[in-house]
Image (cartoon, rainbow, N blue to C red; front, side, top):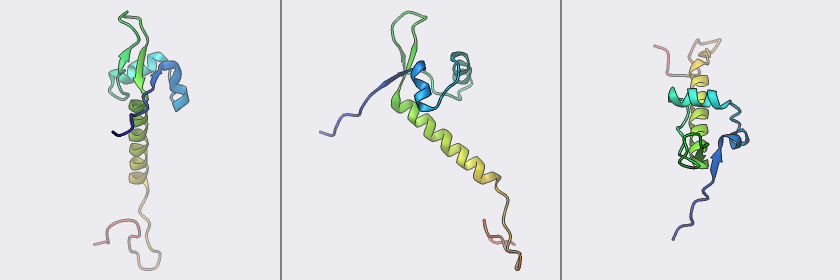
Length: 95
């Protein structure tokens, strides 16, 4: 059998360990805007019980966010031109 994944539950107070220092209200706004993963559960049945996320849920979100940042940064870079021949050095050939 393959080894079992190391499952860890993260509460909101644990998120700064992952670099997420937003307030509870800001996290809730991002969840409603679908910009942050919804909680994987609550610690009890009480409506005021804290939310929690699996460690891998937050890791996946951070990987996707980093990839989107890299893609945005790559798309924003200006094209470099060869000063002699005027050819495009960072994309498809000039027409």
